[in-house]
Length: 515
Image (cartoon, rainbow, N blue to C red; front, side, top):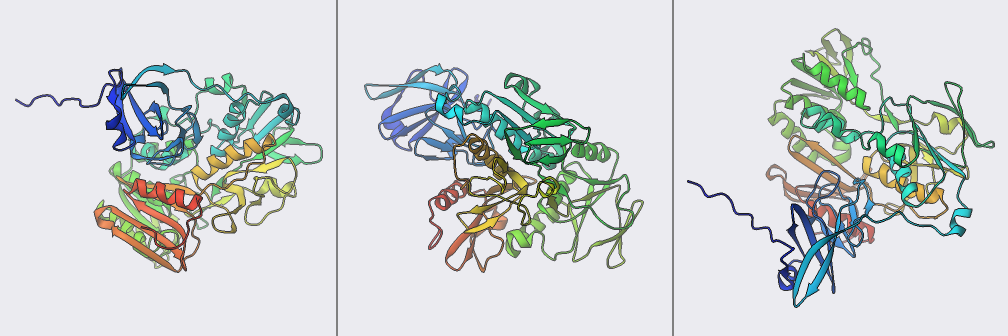
């Protein structure tokens, strides 16, 4: 008879030898039922919750930078001293414990209270706007509202969202939720109580129609007016629509909102076959999720290698092979000509049948408000290094913002969830006059079945790639270069390497040997 597996996790209340911690600088132990990460930095030791509050990533597998630790999965960052979230995508702090050092042993017993919000000086508060209005109910807007309160801002905050649902975990909508492996109550980023307790007036189904820059007022389509002291535009992006005959049929779906994802889930329950138009990240994540639900899936796209423009031909072909190994059928080098009921006719006259037709052919930034307000535009809303637009007191963040990226020495606009959250964080502080430069390295991840691709940096074009490892072994890194300069790094199951690449980019180590 098999013996039960013994739990060898050390009991930190009994203490561990300091020499044991010195081997690696970090160790996971238990305090009661809680898993706790203990980290040694110089002469100091810290104890915090062992798992990231985003998706429970194991922080012991991340990297320690100064008095912070970074999650290996999606690059959230926490303070070892306070447990606070320093960088999204995590939105909640980790718990912290008091560490005692005595006679060469480390003991952890007492759990410490959560760190208090910042207490600003009276002189700081004098310069604050009398109110803040955030237009948009996505990642950037929510994080901005949360950070404002963490910074001690005690005046009115209004979020105007044209969505019917509160801010949601949008990456999950095409991944685990759509695949049926995430519960519906996981999707809202915050509870109703959060908005009430933090005095954030979240107004749903509110579409802003005009900004009066001189009067500092907004008007919504229902005639309501909202004055503001400072304004954050975080209107996001919207799907590019398929413009062919029959594209307005009820079984043609786009995916941007929680309602969109729920509609696809409902349709999938009575469907056997799906056609996905577009081999974008969103399109292929939808394809993977529908295959997980047991549907036959066909993908139609004009390119000859999926995602070649973003990932290059080698990694793009691996993604294609991965999907084909799960039964997805590709129709590449073709576009949709028309839709007649279940029949999708392609540009080469061939046809495919589909009960569901999902369209993922890209998104475009929602710039109508910025244009109406006469803000400077260039394929997005132009902002300075503080994320302020051409109109003083109006900031922009997320999918609409084109900012001066110090890592690529160019103005860029990216449509990444984590970037939007981090811009919301910086914009909130600058709404309060902090003058904090936005210099985060862009990061995103894409999930296909049980394979996750992490990507740091930004490469719109490159002239060489260095590939280390093997795609089919699910253990590799791709470095995108222009000359000797590293622009971006994509990894598969090399979480530490992805974190280290991000850190090197932050430090300006962008050339020479990488590995």
